[in-house]
Length: 217
Ligand SMILES: *Cc1c(COP(=O)(O)O)cnc(C)c1O
Image (tube, rainbow, N blue to C red; front, side, top):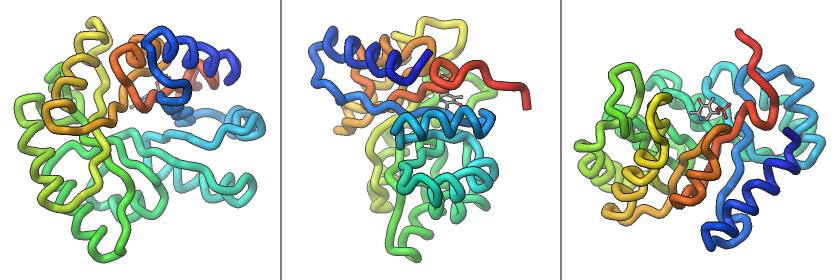
């Protein structure tokens, strides 16, 4: 599907939900995509992208930024503490703050550097053992700790279980955010971004619907 078609669907979903146009930001998830496909989306004028791995993004984005100018880059995948410094240099937003230790590392580096990317706390709404994210029961405490550390937390992020109704998870994330006074909601992917917008998503992360199926690495 073209970028224009996705944008039209986003605008329609915003209107259906009684929301302002542009209130859900489209992050084009370019992980594992061939450069030619990424370049086509840059040529179309899009400037907000998401990646899952620090290493892959570090190989890809400095060159594109030289060529195309400023690109807002979002880290969506799990972040190891030993890659935190590199991630802070490269990314404008980190969506995968999933444990107190990582929050403390980011706070220390932010103090050192005098700047910090905007952050989302990832919540494992399905409590899936293989998935990153703080458990729903521990989310309030984790958010409070991030605040104590002075971190710029915009909101919460989730990846619902593949075999469950996503709406239930989007609603859970929205409830946790509301009771903690957070307005950012990073949720919704290619198959469910319209549902996510109906539930208040402020950041949707769409990969294959824009770029086509990911080629196996
Ligand atoms: C890959 C990925 C996406 C995009 O998934 P699509 O189904 O291709 O839209 C969104 N969010 C995260 C965290 C991802 O890893």
